[in-house]
View (tube, rainbow, N blue to C red):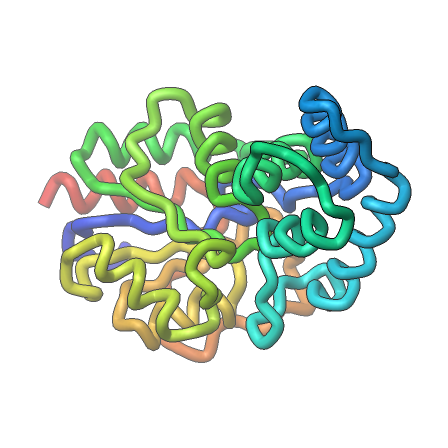
Length: 245
């Protein structure tokens, strides 16, 4: 096994590492928002609201991917919908977006992820999450807390709040500033060979490619130096080895 220096922080790109691919149901999210504003006495045409949300999402979230060149968060969509439909509510767009995200997004933790977070906490290694997603950052934090009780995740960086995404240098600059440690002391774990691994390598971090449930064939490996993890017990062995140093 390769020898590593003890990390100051481990950052997780959550899709396929902490959570299985997140499934969205726009209609359920819109219905939840409509119900929330109805309690204030404003009644929406849910079908029209849902159709307009879906139209904007189709235009800016090309092929269900969150494209950096047209980065529009769901909160921004709600700002637009409030103006378009003249929604009379005391809730601000961020609050509506959180209601929407909680109802629209379904998640399932990856087996073993909770054990890794606990192990890192016991080893006094700081942890953080960097998510490239259009949905509420508050929802992502809620999902982490619900899935991994007692976690010690220090902060989240979500592109829905910070404009830039994980294939852009400034996204990783935000991570480094929040971590407040040298980049080489940060281990970054992600499942995407390009958007996670190659990008983290360019940022000067120590990249780990978590293959997990990725198909064995058809995916090109990262074009940089990286560390491969097929399952979480592989990473547990690495951390245990580092702690003994």
